[in-house]
Length: 262
Image (cartoon, rainbow, N blue to C red; front, side, top):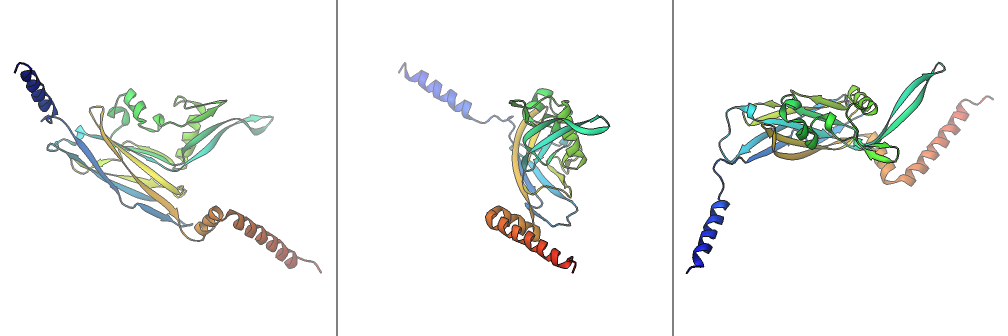
């Protein structure tokens, strides 16, 4: 009997520890986009996609929406890109140096309900890659591959050029709370939006700490003759190349007949 009492006490302790705490917070994000597949035509002039979401809690929702902060990061297709620095020498502009960016987002947008530096401390922002200045943009530096500080000349120039084209965007007031737990944000899509799959990451913060996160996605696809040509080139490369060469030869032959001098 002397050995049974400690075992019973241990069992009871484990049972108590397994019970959910009444004051524990357990948030969950439910999100959806207004259109999971957007088709664009050659005369596409841009548009906007809307992200809706709600915050679900085990306990009753708070009445003060300011207790919550949201950061939405939209990442488009990735590709290798090069940023070049020009210098004026002997009266002409030439490429003096360049930096290659490896598999970086062609489209990148970050939205929040207030300035990101007010949402979380710097160490959290770096760890969670909150804001364009903290998103990793891997560069080839000599024989090394790394991201550098946000005020690096090539990185700053790369982000500036993408921003001027509307492909990189950050808005600290884009996320709107419709109720203490319902929110929405618009995702601008410029005219030159790249074709492909887009990932949307939504992170919920409170008091500078990450509570939960979720993801969704959408796709942008071309329709019409341009998409038919692109699909043919990708799926039947050899046939497409032969037909292109034949069309070029035929065009040259027809031009020689039209402009022939008798």
